[in-house]
Length: 333
Ligand code: HEM
Image (tube, rainbow, N blue to C red):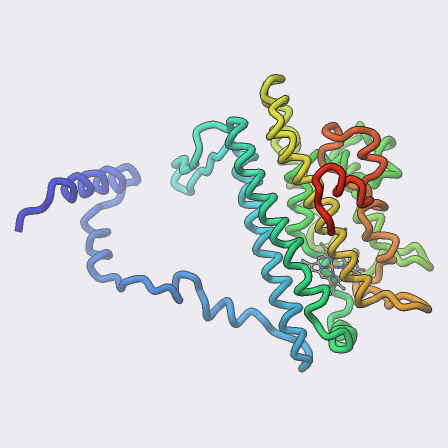
């Protein structure tokens, strides 16, 4: 049987591909001959995925709590996947030294498209948060959470990585210290990042245990990441466009949307969820992470804004109040 010219062409291309990394095509063709067809369940790792939920109690709703956290982690993972590509202008160097980047250069249109992706991820998370807010039995939640002490979503490192990849650390310094640390080193600024100040025990002012554990595990990594993103975080990437490109209304709009999604809408629905389970009339239920969550979590208290220069003074003053959302983006939460 004659081999079709298209197939011969492919073989030539494959030969060139393997020769370029010093490998022999024939051995790889042998591998192809012997390998089994791919199955969905193997590729998606379904069995492994279903083995990752390991409740610590017998309350059935703990399963919902674990799965939803895992779903959120995967969306955070997708967000970081986009942020990393943007930071590196799409370049991805393989261990063999080949650039397997998907885009040649970072133009404003591509930038907009990728930020839209991230916005969609956070919108999906915000909309689905009702799975947590109303989708668990309150009595079960208040019991199984006691078996999870002192772990807390506060320790979600991907969430902190997203912040670091989005903006300059000076904008993440606790708002009461921002002026003081404006010109300091990244390391000094990281020591005053807003969440370090938040996770304290109200009565004593001491660091909550959840924060101590979190810092022990991740602080060095975060400082290193912040240093490496100093000139390539999303805000810096935006500043590197020409003056004209920066005036592109869609670009600004998507960045502002991202600020609202990550720093208002998700935190707000998350806070409302904490309030549904943990607010009591006489006194609030203590958080598993031990923070004074009522004063720490609301976005209007945190005032964390990735791109402050894209907001007016009035909008910043109203940050996290329903005004920004309803007036600027016509959303209702
Ligand atoms: C019933 C559901 C939930 C409740 C009651 C809840 C409660 C809380 C509370 C009280 C805090 C403050 C820190 C502490 O003392 O523990 C917190 C922080 C946090 N939680 Fe949740 N949470 C819930 C679901 C989630 C989910 C699904 C995620 C997704 C990963 C998550 C991620 C976070 C993050 C990232 C923080 C830190 C927020 C910040 O620093 O501004 N939480 N949560």
